[in-house]
Amino acid sequence: MSFKVAIIGRPNVGKSTLFNRLVGKKLALVDDTPGVTRDRRVHAAKLYDLNFEVIDTAGFETAAAATLQGRMRAQTELAINEADLVLFVVDSKSGLMPDDKAFADVVRRSGKPVVLVANKAEARGAQGGMLEAWEVGLGEPIPISAEHGQGMPDLREAIIEAIGEERAFGEDEEEAEDHPLTEVLVGEDIADPDVELAYDETKPMRIAVVGRPNAGKSTMINALIDEERLLTGPEAGITRDSISVDWEWRGRLIRLFDTAGMRRKAKVQEKLEKLSVADGLRAIRFAEIVIVVFDATIPFEKQDLQIADLIIREGRGLVLAFNKWDLIENPQATLADLHEKTARLLPQVRGLLAVPVSAETGRGLDKLMDAVLKTHQVWNRRVSTGRLNRWLERILGHHPPPAVAGRRLKIKYITQAKTRPPGFVLSCTRPEAMPQSYVRYLVNSLRESFDMPGVPIRMVLRAPDNPFAGRAKKRT
Image (cartoon, rainbow, N blue to C red; front, side, top):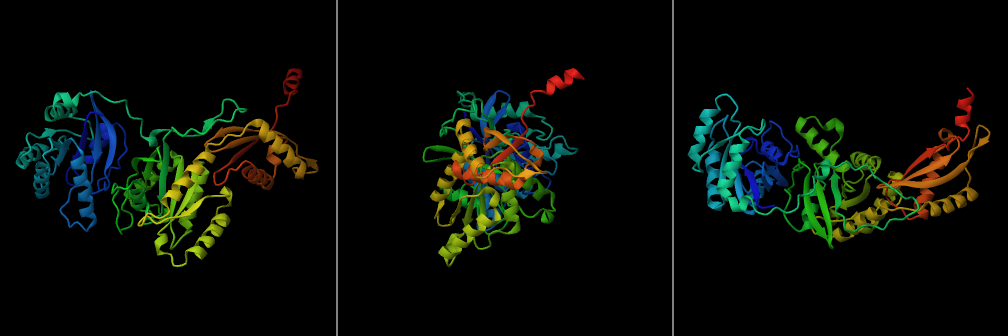
């Protein structure tokens, strides 16, 4: 990217709407409620022939540093320092507010080039508010409508003038890959079932961090990347958007997703919280590995298990992180109890890796990432058809399928049809009559024999093709 642009302004002026317009996707949550955005979000953007990175920020508010609003303001100031250009957004509809002038002084002191953007210019009576915008002393306001896409050519010209043509049209790097939440990840089909593919460590790994509110998800990500990148604090439910953070761990490229805390569905009443939870669910569906953060002082609440079950049903790799381990008084006994509960309450992913961590002190985070990498390798594992059928022959000799209605079920062969997660096709007579208990026995034995702990394994039963079916049709 040739340059970086920060969008700032007081709450509810349309910063996230403009952000979505520039990136061409509805990534940031948008609602009429002031102060929806809290973390800063960075993404590749395009405005006609201009390519740049854009930063969405929280609404600027005058507040003490110790408060949530004060910490949000600190994040916005970091965005200003990081940017090459600032888009200062005011609301043409409501007119100028005292905070607008105060924050204009902050931007002016930063010394960064500024474009004054008068949003909601399509509203009735917006002309007066746009004229008032001259009072902040940041030059001519550019009237736009971020919601309807009006005024974008004028915004382009203003950006070029502010940053200079040489910087605006500098040599572009290769286009950034699309936002992971826009990619459909349904598993990879295997072209040759007899070839075991080597694990590819060059591809970036997508990891979503989920859990109940106030479990310490954002604090843990900040500790992992060793940067105050995400807004944290003692208040529950600070994170609202699913924020992506690019990071490198031991030479491996990783994209981390912080998500909003997920409460029980019955407790989620407000529209904004519903949008936040929906954004988190999308992050789960299109991640590769999901870290579920448990509060070690109150683990295995019903909501924790429901989140874990959702991840398993989606086929994602799952790792448990027991956070706030520094508050546990008897760690050895507690850890043994938690491992026993993990095996008992989540039997569908036998061998699930669970790691005690402390986001506050940084303890256990390397072990957590080792567990994530191991789970990712298993999630991508491929077993050749030859090895599978030699295993199946031993299983059938030791424990054949039961007889149903006086007729014994016959299993012909097994093959792996896909990875991410591992999926197998079992050819057998009367698939509908196969007891689920025997299918679970096969899955658990497969998991143990081929070292596939802690990931969902899908088994599809199919009847073999009838070679005489075509002849029967011809006779009729």
